[in-house]
Every structure is written in C-alpha cells, then in structure tokens.
Image (cartoon, rainbow, N blue to C red; front, side, top):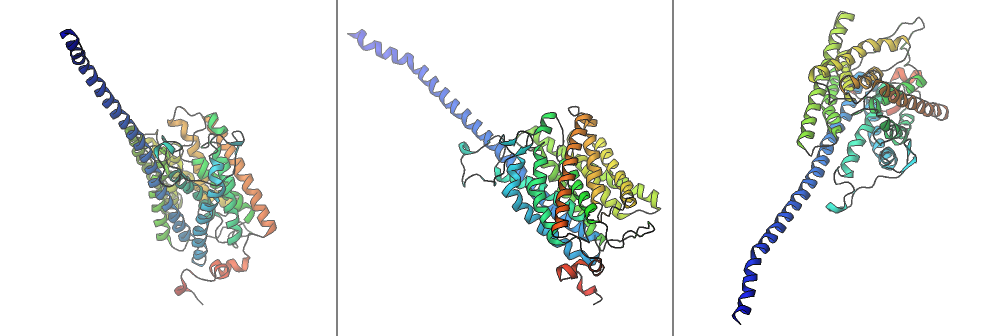
Length: 450
C-alpha cells in the first residue's frame, strides 16, 4: 500500500525538471520568434524609410531643374519654363500611376517576356496592413517604392524640358511628357530594373546613368532635331549667336539643389538599409557622389579657363552635374579617388561637347545633352573600371539598346506631334518672348519695356 502511494510522488518529482526545461525551451523559442519577427519588420521599415527619404530628396531635384533652367533661359521665357516644370512633374506622376509603374516592374507578368510588361494602375497596400499581408516583407512598402521610382521618371522629362526651351509650345511638350513618362521610359527601364533581358545579360546601371540620364538625353536630342534651333541662334555664315541666361545666381542655386538631391538619387538606389553593411554602403555612395561632383566642377573650371582665358560659370555648373551623372552608373564600388576622376572626366566631356553641338547646329539651351547624354554614356562604360562583375561588352550592348529605343521612340512621337498639332513657336513670338505670347504673364514685369 505504501509503495502505491509513493510511486506517483516519485514519478512527479522526476518529471518536474523535465517539465521546467520544456517550458523554458518554449519561452526561449517564443522569444526567438519574436526577435525574428521584429528584425523582419525593421528591415521592411528601414528600407521603406530609405525610399521615402531618398524620394523626397530626389523630388527636390524638380526644384533644382526648374531653377537651373529658369536661370539659363532669357528673362522673356522664364514664366514658360517654370510652368513647364510644374506641369511636367504633375503629369508624370499621373502617367506613372496609371501605366508606368507596373509597366516598368512587371514582377513576372510580361506580355513579351523580358521586353514588354503589362499595363495596369498602381495599387497600394490596404490601410493598416499587417505583417502577414505585406507582398514582400524583405523589401519595402509599395507606396515608398512608387514614390522613389516616380522621381526618377519625372527627372527624365525635366532633362528634355531644358534642351527644347525657348521655342516649343506648351501643350505639345506636355503631350510628349505623358507618353515619355507613361510608356517610353518605363519600357526601357523594365529591361534592366524590372528584371528584363538586359538584367539577365548582366548589364549594370546602379542608379541610372543610361536608364535615366542618357535616356532623357536621347529623348531631348530627338526633340531638338525635330524642333530646330531658336530663331537667330545660327547665322547663314555659320556664326553662333550667344544667348546668355537671365539669372546665373538662380541657375547656381538650381545646381546646388540638384547636387543635394543626388544623394537621394544614388544613395536610395542601394534599395536596402536594414543591415550594417547596407547603411555603410549608403554612406559610401554619398561620399563617392559628392567627390564626383567636385571632380566635375573643378575639371570644368580648369579646362574652361584654359580654353576661353577666363572661367565660364555655366560650364562649371554643368561640369558638376556631369560629374554626378558620370558616377550614377556605379557609385558604390569606386574609392574616393576613383570617384573624383570619373566625375572629372564628365566635366571635361561637357566643356568639349557644348561647342561641338553648336558646330552641328544642335541648339540645346541648358546643355542637357552634354550633361545627361554624353556624360551618361561615359558613366555607363566606366562601370567595369571599378566593378569586376561588369563587362565592357555588356555595358555597350545595354547602352546601345537603351539609346536606339529612346531616340527612335521619341523621334516618332515628336514627328507625329509636329505633323498633327505643331510644336514650334513662330519666329515673331520667339522675339517677343514666350511669357507674353504663350503665357500672358511675365516673370519680371517691373523690368519690361512695355
């Protein structure tokens, strides 16, 4: 009888440590699961934050483009230029929402595999979305990604705006912007950033020397060719008439705003900020971006002084921008010295190619083609110099594919617009100024002769 009573007690005593250990293991497992969930959430949060911060920095570049262009056009065309920049950004946002974003990022839903995505509006996560309902918890929110990528899309249109300034009609230009930002740019960007055929080939363009900047330059070149030069720019004897900008301090402000925005442009393109290595890489990108701009500005300052006996501020401004464009294809892998040299080459390219365009009677008001197209091509081909995963052959193929598509697609649209509704302001209205003839208001009315 005693044995029957003591056996259960003994068994219980033996089981107590095991039960305690099981409970402790369960607590530890729950804690580890909570830590893992927190880490996963933090990666999502930090990545989304990077996109949002980078996005509003790149958005500020819209102000930079506006100030730069408004300062480099003549005062009689300043209101038109400001209007174009506000309108183009707003239309780009709508076109990218309705068509461009999903066309650029098919996520496997290709109409033509690797070449053409599907068309559908952008849809955000529902309000108060839970962890388990997020599409890609290891990436970022759709809203942050959309905002960040939209800014790149709008920048392409801003590049075109400056090149075709002072002689283009407002609404035909805006019609081109809708097609450019809704269809043309997203298609070619999908080939690389949307995991299309160029991405599979190994083409490397970190933040868009070709995908964004050269793409905008190609569209601008097609527009300038179809549009023709400003009235009086080129004489029959081949003489080039200098048409200086109205406000160089304003243009300088625009350049510095663009320089600031470029930290978001390149730094945000790391696309991740959830680990120590990602944050260190973002800071490395910031540093290299800054050095490239400095190299481009100094190179343009020195070379313009040598060639023209005095420094040329407009060349220095565009030299800094060319340095930024040059480093955009690969801002991560270079060291500070290499980044400075890559940017310096961009500055040299600008000083040499601005007068070259005049020889071919290609009238680019703000120097957008030398800065964004020529420096963008250089930056794309410079990637293998510091990134061993890239090859010159693949870089050339990608650069050529983007160039051919962007130029000829834009050319077709420009020609259609020219034939259907006309794109060029009359010579008489150019003499009077677009502010009076197209806008009915002047940027600087107190200085008007009327």
